[in-house]
Length: 472
Ligand code: TYD
Ligand code: MG
Image (cartoon, rainbow, N blue to C red; front, top):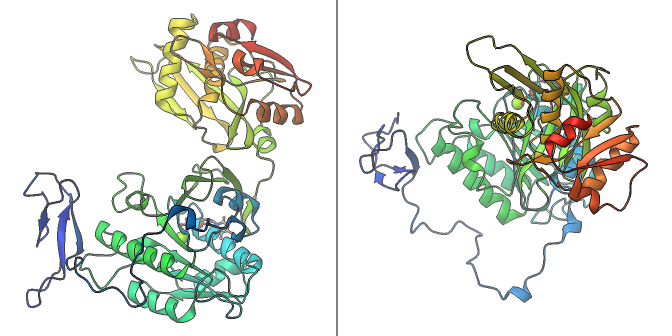
């Protein structure tokens, strides 16, 4: 694995991620705890290292004397769908990870964001730090994956060309940091962290050791200079080996860019955010001219809804403060193999299994031996339990071959005893439903009891799943 030279003293060592045991050489299995594939290269001489130049000694500070972070100082990129997910924009010194599958559109989103920051960054020096007030500080886009001409071509195609945006094709961390120290950018972006390597380690770019070392050094850069730094990271479907998952605890915010294969729609979601909510999401459409914001996702996700078809139900989901009406489709079919299969797209498979069991045991709708397919139309993934009632009713609708009224929608969490439980943001969901012309809503009784407005909808409080099924 390692190409560690025999002639020079080792600069790095290998530490077991499972038990902390340290070895001079790489082993496939930790000699101490026996864990396979757990040894990761790290810089050996960490303790006792001299402080890097410019690093101040740390001082304890009384809590009431600490100046609160000024959240007004956020720099928005002007793409509302991105800014909302970031919690209003980039904060000085923020260290952000933009993750996603290869090909989903991370580089496209990044270049559009950077062009937006260039346009909206009000102070000429950009972020607070040494660059403040030094004339329009550049925004530095480092690509380790593509040449500058490829990056520029994409930027041109999506209309993200601005003279403030500087491109650098480089994979060596030390050289990138040297460029950054010299240029004092307002924002630093690295595409991607997996392509970087530090001279301090012998392992290959993309290995867990390199990814950690490079991310750690970039974080130190972001924190000491106040320059917001964005890392792009690939998530691999199989293991998340060396993937951004190993970085999640290091960074301030993790946003994932998601898309289902074949669908032009993309969702940006925060999984962790020290500066804002993790509930928000942004919706985009990938076009030939780059990513476009989708301002009205409900309309879009309902656009191709079949009317009067069994197995189709509209659910009011809410991602953060943002309501999105989605169509849940279910198909119950005779088992193709000996046992019933479950296929879930856009909803959690375990949750579906639970709902099928509840349907069978508490609502006399037994499809346990049949094949059940559930899909959220438009390639959206809905993780919140408020979709439960809709999923269960869609399955029952398909099983009985009876369509659910097209102007009715529903939401609510389903518990193991078949009870329908209250969810958040009932008001926001109802307002969105009314806006889109729905007339009736089945909702948890507890939510109904606490409502202030009816939004002109006929509201049907539901206590139990069986009650919803008989009503529909
Ligand atoms: P890219 O941003 O390179 O993805 P990532 O950095 O996540 O690997 O874009 C991936 C795909 O997006 C690419 O296959 C082509 C498509 N695309 C468009 O459809 N329109 C565009 O304007 C651009 C730039 C890309
Ligand atoms: Mg890319």
